[in-house]
Image (tube, rainbow, N blue to C red; front, top):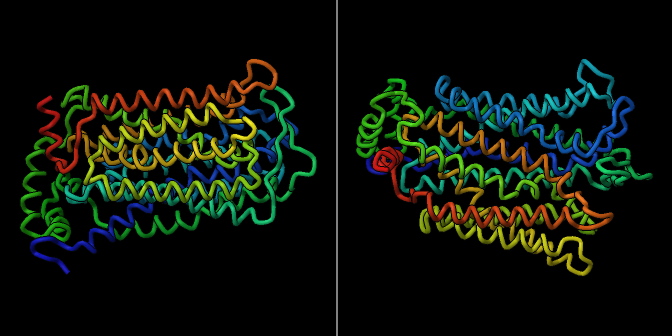
Length: 489
C-alpha cells in the first residue's frame, strides 16, 4: 500500500530483487568455468585434429569475456533504444541460449562426444553469446537499480547487485561441487612449455559429462530471470527521457510517496533538458574516472582467483580444492555484506582505499609464500585476505560509482564505455593468468607465481592512490547532483 510521504518500500524491494537476479546470473555465468575448466580442458585435449595448448585453454576459459565486451559496449545503445527493462529481457534470453548451447555444443551439427577444432569454435560461440548477456546485465542492472532507488539508500541497493554477483558465484561453486559428487577432476600433467597431457586413471565421467551439467545448470536461473523481468516497471528517468512523464510520476509515487515524487520528477526534467548530449559535455575527467574505476577493478587480478580457484587450491596441495572454493565463496559473501551495510555510513572512497591496501597485502602474501612447503596455510590466508578485501570494496563500490557518477544525459553511453573497459581488462587478466602463472626462468622455479601476484599487489597500491586523488565522494548525492558536480569541475 502506498504511503503519501514515504512510498511503498515493499514495491521498491520487489523490483530491485528481480533486477539483482541479473547480477546473480552475471556471477553464475562467469564463475561456472571454475569447476568445469579442467574437465573441459581434458575433453579437448583428446582431439585428433589439433593440439589443445595452455594458450588455447586460457582463451576458451575466458571466451565469454569477449561477449561481455560486446554486450557492455552495446548496453548504452540498447538501454537508450529499447529501455532498461527490455534490454534486460534480451540479456535473460541470451543467458538461456548460452547455458543449453555450452552444455551440448554438438547440437544438430556435430557428433556427440567427439572433440574437434570445429566443436571448440562452436563451444566458444555459445560462451560468447552468454558473455553478451553478462555484458548487458553488468551495465544495465546497476543502472536500473540506481535509477529507481531513492538517493539515501541507492548505494546500499546497488551494493545488493554485487552481493547477488558473489552469491551467484557461491551458488555455482556449490552446484559444481554437487555435480562432481564422488567423481574427481582429471589430473593435467605438463609435458612441455604450454603443452599438457591427461594423467592415466583420470575420471572419464568428468571429461565427457561433468562439465556439460555444470554449464547446463545455468538454464534454470536464466529462464526465471527472463520471465520475472517482464513484470518490473521501466525506470522513471528513462520514461522522462522518452516523454512519458505521467508514467514516470506514477512509478516515482509508488517508490517515494506522491509529494516527494513531484519534486524528483522536476529535478529529473531540469537535468534532461536535452535528451542526448555529447559524451564529453561534462569534461574528460568524468569519463576518465569512470573508465579507470573499471580498469582497476579488474587489473587488481581478482578474477584470476575467482575463475581458477580449484586449480590454485589444487596446486597448493589442498586435498579437496572444490571444498576450499566453496569456503572462499562463503567468505566472499560475508565481506560483501560489510559493504552493503556500511556504504551509506562510511562512504565510497574510504571503502575503496581500505580494500585496495588489504588486497595489496594479501596479493603480496601469496607472491611470497606460494609453493613453499609448510607455508600452505599462510598462502591460503593471504588468498582469503586478498579476496575478502575486494568483496567489501572494489567488488560492490565500483558498480555503485559507475551507476551514479555520470550525469543523466550521458549515463547510458558513459556506463557502456566504462563497463566495456572493465570487460576488456577482465579478459586480459583472465586469459593471461594461466600462461603467466606457469612461467619459468629456469627449470622448476617459481618465477611465474611470485611475479603474477607481485604485479597484482603493485596495481592494488596504485589503485588506492588513484581513488584518494581523483574519485569524488558521492554518498548522499542525487543523480541530478552529479550533473551539477561535473559542471563545476
